[in-house]
Image 1 (cartoon, rainbow, N blue to C red):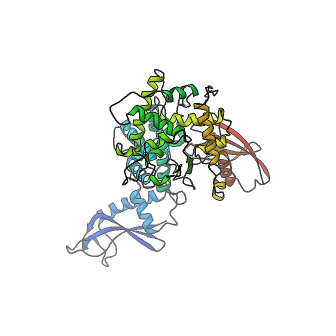
Image 2 (cartoon, rainbow, N blue to C red):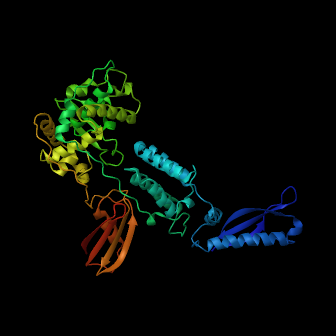
Image 3 (cartoon, rainbow, N blue to C red):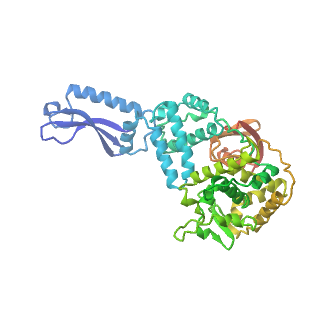
Length: 486
């Protein structure tokens, strides 16, 4: 442990000496300046030791306080400056609000602006609940977090989305401020006693075929405006549905060089920052929707954008909002009270492709530009024509038959569908005895969880059958597995 001693350094012009606490650690020195001073009468004849009774008493109390702090950790391998920094910051509370906003700034810098908005809305809601714009880490106890989550109970998605976002911020803070190897624990983790509820399953995500036909059969009201909302909503829905469920943000942000020889090339905005292939995909624009697609092409030679939506709207959010208003107006003509947003047309494409056109789930995922077969994509030059063929089948089913959808929406209870944001608690057993456990986020499937547990197994458990109990804490689902470890 470091050695602490009250000392003085050079004499000041006024004849006084500042008093310092000297930290000696591994032959290194660091100094903490106190508020006390002494004159020459308060020093020994050789000017090396302090003899002033008051200063000796005060510095002894301070040194004892510092020693008490250091006794709580193993500081033997620290430098003198690390020891000083530790005792200075020991009682210092840290602003969670400030840290969350820095985390949001990092997300934006990485190009995850849309994701950052969920984090921003989450911290804003938490601050409103706490009635302060500066929440400290010490305030975030499990009791506080559970009360906050209870206040979100009436929401559909926010009750899961907001706590998950704040837990990710907290997880980043734990890695930054705590150092388990050095025994430094500046902030404690309260999330182990917090249960995050699941989002409500949205209703009517996939639109029945008969309603899709009715939607696209509506003739928009006459308007004195060019491209009124009802017309734009219906047309964009057709472009999305007719191009493998293309997302609104990818339509709005499309640039002219992405449309070549009737083929639309794009990188999916939602996943391009997290996929090795940048979410790249190619969709052939079907002749059936080409007039609608080309109707909105920008005619401004100076504009880099493929579509003219930027002439009226500044962001993808405003574009999506206006499109959904137009879609709502169309639905009012189809069936009073029926509601389905633009995103529902993406769900409908997937449902019809699988249920009505005989596509496999992998083929549906491929057409939707989901991340599948990651390693294969590294080596194989992708042929996108299977998705184009499937897309034509979906169009044919909706516009050239009068068959009704046979799908029945059910809640997906598949345990293996794990989000990287889900909190996973997992345990490994041998002959009924628990031998190791973990609790963390960042997993996307059960194999990753078991692989991590295997690395934590004691070395003596080789050539043994190991049972695994894995709990998705957020979904309150548990599943059991077995592996032969060799």
